Length: 620
Image (cartoon, rainbow, N blue to C red; front, side, top):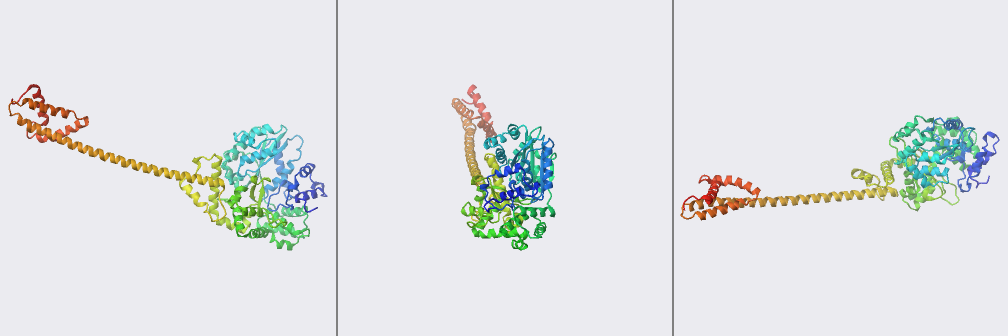
């Protein structure tokens, strides 16, 4: 084969020439493979390494024949009207995704057994936008539909997916919706969890034509309780626990992949690699990476134990090559690579750390958003740093098409989180900041999905916690995503406005208190002056009555003068306000009581004055 032929295609052609008819692909498989756009394939190594197998690598997939048949039997039961959900469960690194994509899905493309409906397969990865991702997956299976229109239909209510299936799936077919990995619903922290939950449960109920196939890490089973309705459906599902491969199966993997990829292994090398993988606890992912490394070393020559030792063995190959790649980036490039890798990790709280797929734009922004960050990302994805050089180790995967704006970045496998020494150290060093940043990113995404309501913004202690935990400018090349920056900036602005408003209210209240105190003091002073004036008037009246009128009563022909004097005095006192009248009564008690020793008192004299003015009396 010419070296420019893609490795997966070369492997497929080799499988067509297999001596045993059982090892040759079916006609449907041949049609599917030969119609693929192979010109876009750049990687010439057929072995996937740490990455999961895909459908184009089905001929390289060994060691899971029995498990593949059992899953297919479960799906046939679901197709014939039995239980509607098949749940594939197992620990990280056990090979769930590879079994699904390279073992099960290629066989579902083949014609069904007589009397059973045909499968319309839709493969959706929840990622960071579960509903949008589901809409894109549906449009991939039904290309005439518009993705935006499909998404609006899904968001219209729980009946959205069921309606799409009824409208678009032919009567003689069933839709098999593959959601893998299901745990991304929880690691991405999307607020759309409940939306997808309602869509799936409604579409699975009744006599609908939807069946569900999921892959779920077993340590995330308890997280299903976060969904309102889907956990109850799990009780009725066909659950398939996938166990780690034994030594015989792993040996079949090594020998089968080496044979299909054209690698010649020295005697005993396959057994040695299996023992190394079992001892390292990494199993299938480490074997895949070791075989990919050996393929690079082979050059067509037989692979020996010396090659195995040179690459550091099965356990050391990954760590050694990853460290060499990071060191080759230089100090600044290594710093960019650090934040690229850390941005793709969901820090575990009570569970293991996991991968977190992110949009390419967000990953680059957190790593600095410059040319160095772009170069570091390409080097981490396996591209050579030298024109025409051999591809380097692949630590991240780029997916989503040729358009950069739509690409997604993901760690090639979670094994990196335990095997690459630098990454392990970075995770421990930055764990607190990563936890806070993850919380901020989740809160910001939920805020944006809810149309950015101010009520969803953090305030007070929570805002201070977020701001203190995301690091300070200049500490590294990393930054928050534009969405998270907008989230914190808006929250900070509203918090400052709340502080300013609070201070203004306190100032206004203080001013109001001062004004009220001033008015109160002024009123009190006015009342004091009024009391003093009233006292003087009453004292004057008492003096007139008790002294002047008494003296005038002994002078002849003064009756009219006394009468006019007393009448004027009485009219003046009667003109007081109601409040002053009440206070006058009190003062009468005080002033009149003092005058009682000298005569009838003010009240009696005034009554006498009234009587005198009406009938007369005293000396003329």
